[in-house]
Image 1 (tube, rainbow, N blue to C red):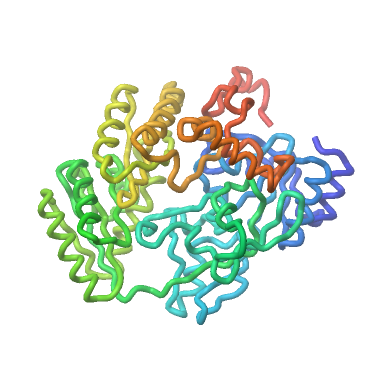
Image 2: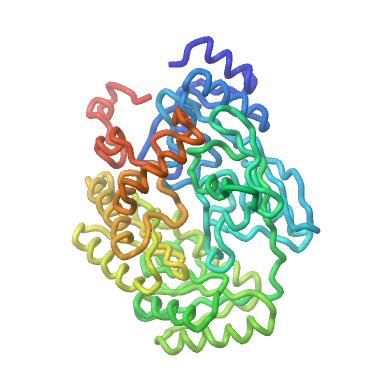
Length: 483
């Protein structure tokens, strides 16, 4: 519990009306999209601008109080999980598109601006913001910077780091600095690149300058069904081997298709074992030629149905099905865990076969929907907590992630390490690697007050029993309440 002196200091920093201490309201901030990990913070602060963010962080530094920056709370790795004796600094009120420069094709936005709203604000100039996580309607640019978020079109256009030129950053001692520059580069170490993807452990990004792209001349989208996941995976490899770099190549297996169709009725084939969404964009002549090559590759691998979107409406419907898949899985399973790992494209068929075998051994279903073009998997482990399946699901989810590393990939492609995968980091990195990362972090935050317990493994974190929160029997009986 924070004392009166500290409460007064926070009230002075952000305004008394912007300090949340009510226990009921605090429960709204106890987790992010990974709901299995929960912790109610001591306070939530709602700053209105960069100056008040800096003032709040300065108070934390002065009194040694840990803090966690939070955007929309859509993260899936527990990256915004609060600290029991700390505060959450919510950026939800910093929602201004500060500037759009159509000549230099840049925009300056506050961290609470949603990803999709950047594109909406720049569409009148024929421009858009390329990174597009499936949650782009609700996820915020500040969170995208923290996780180096990707999306369906990052195969061709890259991740958040490829589109952020500079940031005004509040360091963990309250100092305000600028990382990056007009071109995304600056003299000396690439501190902009170090900060992006650091999951809130190096400070808080405020005003963010992003690169905008011109809307492509032509966009062509197809939905192709295949007799097996293996056949669909081979199509992906052959497309890339042909020198074609699509804007997106997405794969869904039968379970994911079933869920998506129940949710939005996008026109997917319920009986197909696997489907690919392939999108090409660019100059009309180039796009048309490559589209014919893609269709031929699909036919060569036994495509059972090829649906080509006739217009923007049909294209949007296809993408609605793909982007609704995560949430839609709730229609076919009472509980599920979304995982995020990467494997080389050439091992897609192998890893999917291994995942299926692992799921069968655990007695659990696994739905797969992912960015096939860059091997970024999103296996969804389906389970029923009320039937006592939670622990099996957690173990299977962890095993799948570490399988990706075994096959030459990584623990995460875009969702981050957060709380969920911190204890798996030694599977991918050696002691020296982790020590260097820790030293870099200490260079920004020697006291480790900024989003502590995330990203890097700690003895305390990894010594505890991992997994979802398990209520005490007295809590289940209604005798006690968890705060």
